[in-house]
Image (cartoon, rainbow, N blue to C red; front, top):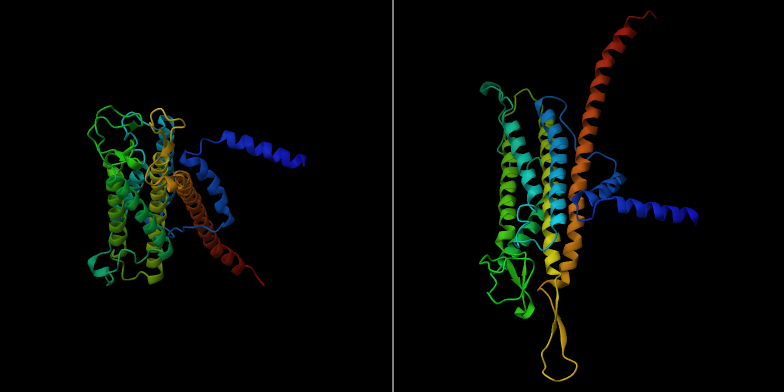
Length: 353
């Protein structure tokens, strides 16, 4: 019994020592620890060459950079808290992880395009492949599903945004007068809540489209890149499959970080309710009722679920960075074993029976 009490106290101190749950890295570290139930590496690297070095930097520096951006953005959102002074102050913080992901994919594309090509006479004839030819199907399906959820969410929130009338009841620390469509109407038109509309979500929508285009173009160009005639099909498939897997994992991590931030924000403002007392003159016991948003039944799930989705995105990128280092060490170990094998055979052959 004393052991259980000690564990409970230790867990309580651990929770207090962690940053707030709103910060992407908090749940990310916890979920990252849970991923080691499956210790097998989620990525691999080509055996050698410039591509191996490029993917190594993408898996380590790129992943950790996206997590750092997401952590800084969510921490700033936590410090500012809702409501912000404008009603759309988080317009750049929510898509910040996806913007960082877009930059990582763009830099990777430039690096892959700068690889030396085989001479025209040394190129093998390759068929035209789809951009997803080397992508793992299940992982690609998860990525597309997350992108669809983000697209639906920001489109819905953008469409429900309206400007508030001059004499409207405003909920949120917003300017007294603004013509921007950043409010959503509460049930029955009893008030207007700030945090919706295109001022809050336009950059997220643009970044999602740009990141999708960058990923498709990068994978498509790499799938149809000329290959040396002497290269084996197995080697080419390994290089391009590992590249596609690495980029999709990076894209999924950044996408989930942004999706979680959008859901947390959308769910938070959707939970706002206002108590109303009906004016019934001199009659006793005036009627009291509560007015909320049009999606208040699911708002709490979106709010809390957004933090979980953020944590999953951060955990994916942390695991990707660690597994990339593990893949590099495995390559070095196999290279050292191969180089030492001929020496051992030579020394054995020199011995007399």
